[in-house]
Length: 310
Image 1 (tube, helix red, strand yellow):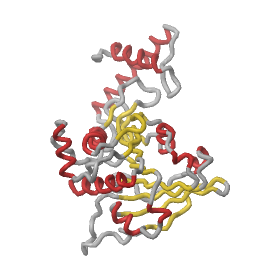
Image 2 (tube, one colour; image 1 turned 180 degrees about the horizontal axis):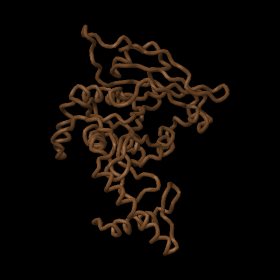
Image 3 (cartoon, one colour; image 1 turned 60 degrees about the vertical axis):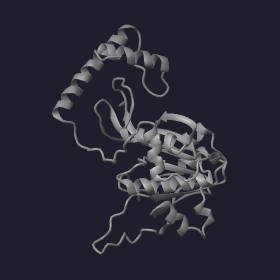
Image 4 (cartoon, helix red, strand yellow; image 1 turned 90 degrees about the vertical axis):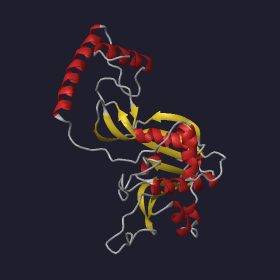
């Protein structure tokens, strides 16, 4: 996703010999310690000799029985190798705490503290509560002061492979986050928002698949000064967004009996629709390389076929 977004926005990070990425996540939503294979980035970006990715968990941390945070809180964990291509190496370090705490902790490590790009991996910008919102704005204000471009990914519902066409949908928290960026913080687009090919399937949705990283965009901080939570809320209210919704983890479970019946009916309708296309000498328009005009035409025909309003 970072590679695709960087290419879409023609970011200089693809030409940087020593690349530093600050990857923001919320450990209450996504795993913090899971390793990732960054060798593919080295393969696709021959001008990048070495890359260091610092995962920064800015999610709220619960205290133990003595009221203390986890032992690793506020401490940079030693970088580990997470990809290699010849003598070119990708390493990852991890930090649990706010961005301000990270910058203070690593002030004597200039090779880590200043990033060329920030990646926000499915972090809803309001979060679970007001404290989360303040922590996220603090980080965004810091990135603004340094002029660091940001890649954002958010969740949504996307079409399942080999399934009937459907309009892809952002989830509610993604819509609010994008509104916060553009309306409250004045971030500007370096590349339009795109549906992402590199999704993380989570669960079956009402029509398609609920997926992480469903949409990606590249934004650059605007010229505004420090934006407080109060100022952000006031800016949103002026655009008729009165409240921000506390994030709620999706309920991941099997489909209900009613959903299963609906899916079985949809599957039969889809098979009939495919036969209808074949009788006309056409094939279902699927995949990233299909003709987009034919795909749009088939989506409209599908909606008429199943009796859905256009």
